[in-house]
Image (cartoon, rainbow, N blue to C red; front, side, top):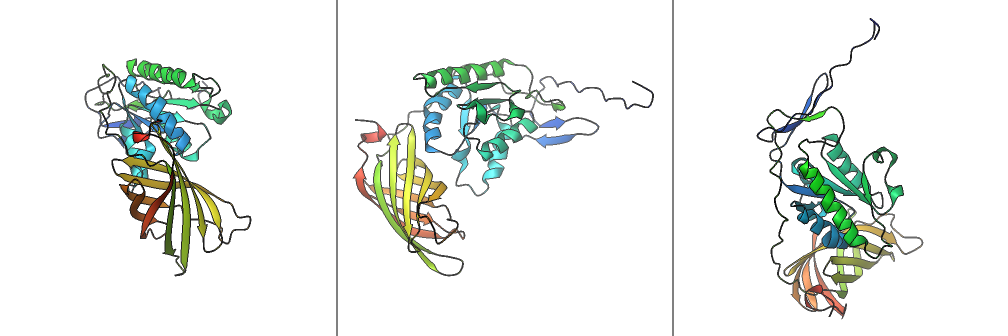
Length: 333
């Protein structure tokens, strides 16, 4: 270079494995330290909160991660906690790897994948639509799967498992971005020697079918809004797909998509998207509902619904109108 040019600082080499995980450093003329209490043999999965993807997670992604010896953790398993973003950030920092499902171009997925790349966290990208991979990410390897292939689930499972195993065989850390290295006293956890075995789970109650519910809440203007809902719950061994058709005393009718968690005799439902079915709704927006329910018997659930911005816990009862036609535990008869 000429005498007036700036000299580049020497390129930072990746730090070899050390002893105890303490932080990730971004190097340059200065540095930024990101504290990590513990690095665990977990794979944090970021994907849309959608019933269809829930089935894919349970039947394909979770078994693939466990086959590689890692413990899977999905973002919506954190829902219901008061500080979800703090939990997501902790999961990204402490996991061994991130798996991101880019199908559908979900904004939350891109944000959480960006957090992982920013701290050099190794990430595996999967998609069923190659157009959903943005230009900036196409330099990274990604796994494409074709849902028109009748064996796409098995193929994707093998691809994820083998990618994770190759990642775990590496002796270096990072996503390949320059200027990110491990701290001098940092180490990766010991490579898992065998697949993760899921403990036997109790059969889940059969709740598939059509349910009805009624409740009312007060708006900020102290006006009472009444709701009549018909919830259609599809249940199989992969999870729940829930759609609620809701009518209000404002003559609005809308369709709300929900995600659910079923455990023993409790059910939690959370709205993730809605579409007005009335052409000219009286209200421009709708506050997504969240249910916390106890399964009383085969025909009744009781609990609370949070249906307004204030988060008021409103008593609610669900009554079963018809069954889905699945056997006990959510399996087809």
